[in-house]
Image 1: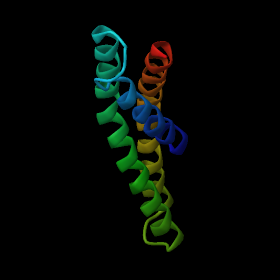
Image 2: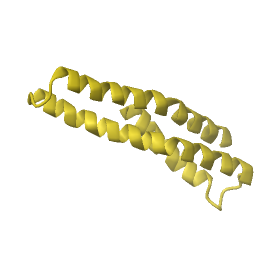
Image 3: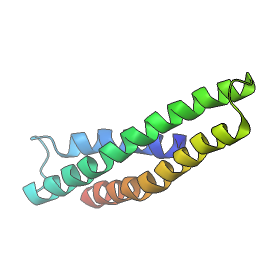
Length: 100
């Protein structure tokens, strides 16, 4: 989750620079970059929320406030969001790298 989120943050920053008015990229390429970023953003945001919940659940589990089953549900949810976010981030990386 950390790697996927970190990659998204870095590539999103590059995407922002590439889509600025001052870059010589065609409008079509800029639109492709924006579309890939917009497609990934909601899933990455939800993945980050799931990561925060997992960190909280880990602390609760360590403090014996929740049992192993409840903790596993949170971890499985995070895994699901990572699986959904990873190809979207990879697609954004591909579009951004292709534009350079």
